[in-house]
Image (cartoon, rainbow, N blue to C red):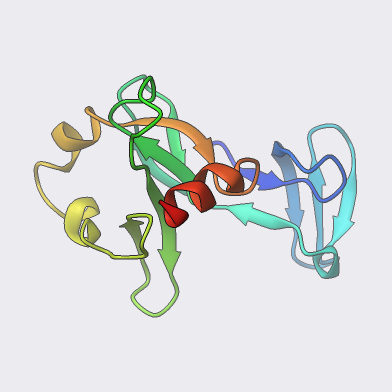
Length: 132
């Protein structure tokens, strides 16, 4: 089973989810904290793909090919409700990497990218690149 993560509304950090109860409409995190769907818990869908370090890539992750370089431009993993697929967006919101998840050579391409943060815990980095 893939790792299921969510943005914890109290700690403001990404945490592992233990249970999503659709009957009771609650999300329980591994630390035991439980929230209703109305608490705006953001569940981060796993893509089923892994980055160059073997880390599972989730919706909201920021990927880069050079995390040592402050000038690197990350790409954001997001889910398109309209297209029912994951997309990779650059900092301008362009989906120039849209077909990456569908290409046959995707696994090879992903092995050049690394998850270094996510949009929820590190929105500053994403905003900083948008302003540049």
